[in-house]
Image 1 (cartoon, rainbow, N blue to C red):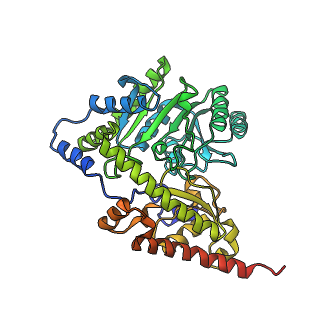
Image 2: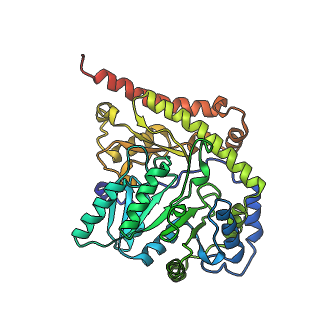
Image 3: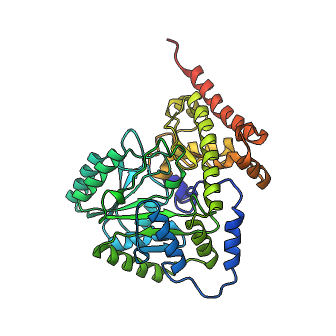
Length: 415
């Protein structure tokens, strides 16, 4: 990270973007945004009644009923997390790895950031015993742990924590008096919803969990940033919401009318939105399986993706072949694969991982086509992997890693 900063490529400004959908904008969403473009009144700080009611309905359908006055909307998840971190105070604990945009919010406020290892079976949540150890160590060193941010459908690892693991982590956080912010951006993108049990921490602890959802993940294009947060139905939750609104107001962090209109439409989950999301999830899941097979065949390590539009791969077994190409750490790997694959390949150091570990996040969106026509065809195809442009993209992807595997095998000493 020091190297990129000296080159004027700081970790925030040049950090990895959220995984792109790789698909055309849903026409009904575009129409909702366009219809609001001529409005002159500004959207109120925290979101207008239509948006807050739509968010209330969204959470109620997921077993988390909430009143309008317990919800806040903002122009993206980053300003919303920034406001929450500012209000809660104290030091911040994050799983390792975690989404690249979490840590900068705390560091911008001068807060201590402590990464906690995740369990072997998943990412997104810290190991409960490691969490307790870290909290006690930080306190012994004079710190003040206050906030734990976690995810139940994780970026970057694309995993979903088992309910028992999550429950233990939530209990550990409660024992230590930590407030939890649960990033549930990708909860609606489960690849196999019938086989994957997703339970959020707000269902386990009703008093200490704020739920955050970035709509520019599953529902909206990145050009229409919007995020919503659900606060606990307690006196403390009401105070937290009020102070969060103060910070957002001071920042001028209000939603543009087109983004608010599109968010309201999407959160209402009409048939067009539900059908598009289901089709997109099936497509990304199908391509993710092909990407995982290519990585495993090349000798990389990668957990089966369960949600989202990405995979997190460990290329440690290919270290010798990569070293021969002057790739010695995660930044080198990011540069090497970004050029070789012709697509973003952010290294694990962007997500709080050790820079010496050869880990990388790879997204499925860039493999769906390079033109709107190709992407639309990919979305509607009976078997997208048989389309020439997808087949070609996957072939090039696999070849890049096969070459590394072949080189690593040549370097292995004879047995």
